[in-house]
Length: 370
Image (cartoon, rainbow, N blue to C red; front, side, top):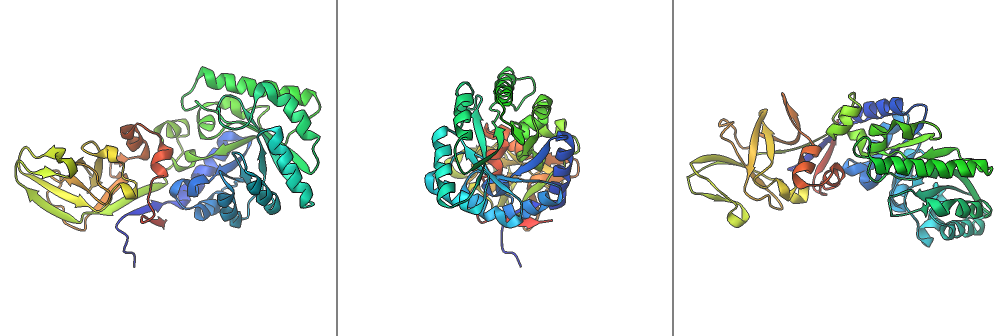
C-alpha cells in the first residue's frame, strides 16, 4: 500500500517504443542512451532495462557514481564530461569508457591504466563551441597525435557536444559541425581512425540530419526519449509521452469573496470561489513559477492554480468541476481526454528547459512503473 501523496508514472513501454523510433531515425548510426541524473528523474535501472530491450548499445552518464549504479544493467557505460584523478582510476578499474579532454587528462588515464596493468578504453572529447570540457578544435589535432602515443590507451572515439541545436538551421550549430568534421578529416588523413564519431544528442537527433550522416557513426539519445518536448515530437511524430505526475485533492472548500490564498497574499478572490488544495509543492517538482499561472487537470478540465505554490501544497480553482471531492485525482503533468499538460509547458512558464523540470521531482515522489 502506497502512502505517497504524489506519484510519477513512468510508462516503460512508451520509453522502449520511443528509443526504437529514435534508433530508426538515426540509422545508419548506432545509438546509446544518456541516463544521467537518475535517467532524468525516472529511475535509472528501470529506464536502462527499457532502452536495452529497445536496442541501446551503450549508456552514457555524467559521473562515476552514476556509472557504477547503471553498470548493473549489463551495457557498456561511457562517461561524458571530465574526470578527477580518483575517478579516472576507478573508471579504468571498472572498464568504463573514459573521456580524454586534454593531453593532461589522457596522461592521467594512461598512468592509471599502466599502474593497473590494464588497457583503458577512451574517447577524445573536443570543444567545438560548447565552452565547457574538451580540447579546442584548433588545438585538438596536435593534442590527439600526442595522446595516441601514450601507453595503456585504446582510443575508440572522437566526440563533441552541440550548444545551440534546439532549433533547426542555427548557424552556430552548423559551424560547430563544420569545425568538428574538419578536425576529423585532418586526423583521418594523418592515419588515425575512430569507431565512434558523434556530436548529436537529443537536439541534434531531432533537428540536424547532417550530424547523423558521414563521418558520424553514433548518436546519444537523452531527454528526447521521453517525448516531453513539443519540438522533439514534431521532429519525431512517433514519440509517445512517457511520464505523468499525479496527486489528489486533499481538501475542497468554498471561500468567500475577498479571501486571500497562499503565502504573500498574491491571490484574492473577487467573488465566492470553490478551491481545492493539492498536497504537492516545489519539493515534489511543482515549479514556483506556476503560482497564479499554471493549471492542472481534474476530470479532464483545466483548473487554474491560484496563489503561491509552496513547499508542500498548492491551491486550484474548482469552479469548472464543482462536483470535485477530496481524494479526486489531480493530473499535474499528463493528459486526460483532449487536454494535456507537458513538461515543456512548465518549462515555458518557468523560462527554462525540460531537463530542469524533469530533474526536479523530489525524493518523496513515488516512481510508479507501468
